[in-house]
Image (cartoon, rainbow, N blue to C red):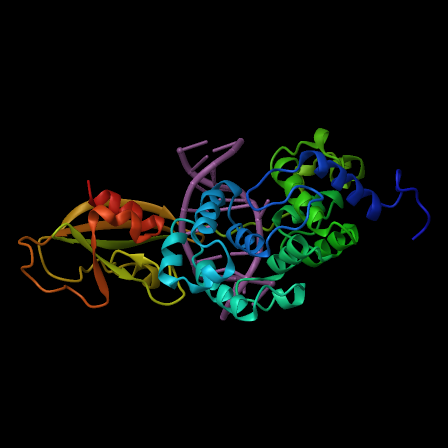
Length: 355
DNA sequence: GATCCGTGGCT
DNA sequence: TAGCCAAGGAT
């Protein structure tokens, strides 16, 4: 490294982090899981929990869940001791439910270890921690120098260096450029500063270059059209599937099942259905004979397909007149349905059936 | 590398 | 408003 004055660094690998951290010191967002710029690192448990919740999920959606989780399970030992079903129900509505299953597994592993490992490589071995989350926790909770690359960083770096190669093929190149501007110190602040910049300034549409601390270094801005970066491959169109869900009611209770496996909504409580998740085109066959009535249609869009869910309702008459219609479920009091932890699709279906 | 896996906010 | 997309991970 050639000589350069700290006040006016000439090399981009020094100028960019210096400018970004200076901006962050004044403009950092205040978030429930975050320490102030320059402050000691926060509790690794809270950093980890927030990072998992924030995977593909907006800050606005995460905030209430983070508050509820930390109030109910204030530390790793409390979460490790929680029944998995309670955690799944508490996660309901947040989506990507494999995160909740891995959250419980991870909590139990970490509790058995006596605490979180403090290195990126060890963190990476834990369930639910991929390259991004391991780097983020290492940097934010343990002040380890780690190259943290999420969608924000991909966007900022793609613009800063005007990377023409489209995602996802450009990931390796983006990682190398990100590494070139990641400082040796203040790793956590740098990572969070990149995310704040990507979230509030270097936004997907109409980036606010006039407010950007990196604008003078930005090749994307110099190109005249920073919004053109990152270049992305066209995405596939979502097919539409049809399915049917069944509202079976008796004695002010409804029959709920718990979904098996790790597929769609795996491990979550739900209404019985006709297998649309696996079959792609549900048979519509009810699980038992009776006077079924159409309660309506729910339209719901998942990550990779849209669903038109027909909701069929059966009010089976005299209380206690029949045995359970199926094995593997439970009668749930309808006035306590909010506590069942139904994923959003089935919460919509239940709302329809109760009208 | 490609595919599967949710949801809600924003424009 | 209908589409776009967000602090990704597992397989």
